[in-house]
Image (cartoon, rainbow, N blue to C red):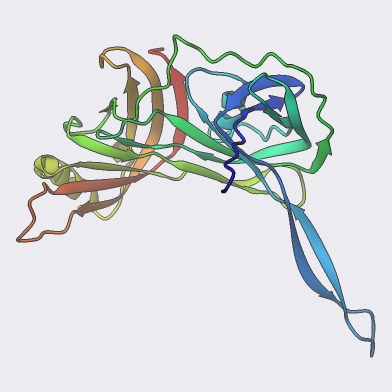
Length: 292
């Protein structure tokens, strides 16, 4: 008879010597070995060499309040100068006993992933963050019992279904799904820092009942073959509490330029309602907690 085992644990991230936050999932670093041919000189046989790279760390965590990990993640889209940090990935058992500790130095955030909002979803708002360290040390776990950052009992992550969109030039109440941006960075080759940061795009899917208004605006924008400054949009996407009254989180997307308009495929036998999709490039991204 097969034996079933479990490996349930608590996960956390330490930044600059301070326990920053608990996380839902954690990808520890690894090594990637790329073989290359290294010539040894004229008329000599070539030998194989190898380039060794450290693979990135990655974590997902619920977004309930600002903390050190959230602020580090948001430093990427906020356009601040690169902030390399030392830290550690921590694994605990359910008695808060430290069972693994993987330390790193001079890591830079290379990606920030925001979730897809969906009026039919029951999931909560969580984000993903990827960072690349300069060095990694698989330290010996102390086995000590460590007080973990508390999980707030009063502040819960917003549901992905409880949202509203402000800033559209037409009624945004019929927006049913939003694919939020994925922010990525290319690291500079010669110095620590970023060569480029791409804020990605946002995609709004709305019921076909909003087609006429949306299409009229799109045609006005594209009519002259260029997007003028006044046609860029500043969108606030608010995540609301269960009563749909209080704002728990606001995703601010500024300088949004139209990238595309698309209607769902028509089918004579189709029963489901059609949709309209708008895509926008994002000029600036930030997130605020509460209604501030």
